[in-house]
Length: 152
Image (cartoon, rainbow, N blue to C red; front, side):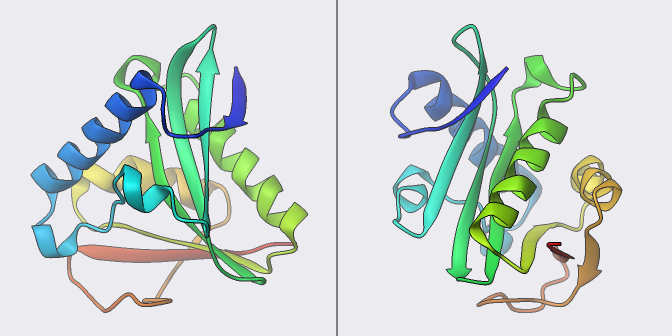
């Protein structure tokens, strides 16, 4: 599996992100959906990676830089066909290494509070993320949970 910075032009990447957004809107009230579309993911403060094997899109993840010390995980997604194959773990470890390389002191995320998001929350907890309050521009929301991890 290769994890590389992606330009958000590949049809497989676009399809994966469209499925991600569809799931978010099907699971959460619209005002509680913080997933980004392709235009938002193209912002200069965001770096987007795609995991592929032999040209097949397996998953994606992005990091949004809030400042030189803090980043946020965005658009973490594994394709349905690649689930339970270690793709999410590989993407998260890649992101943690990148955060360390950039000199971040903290990496945070917002995820849903519903059962649908429980596997993602367990993944983050296994890798040292702890629950916290809202960060950056987020507000308290019963449909959102916030997690953070210090980078060593």
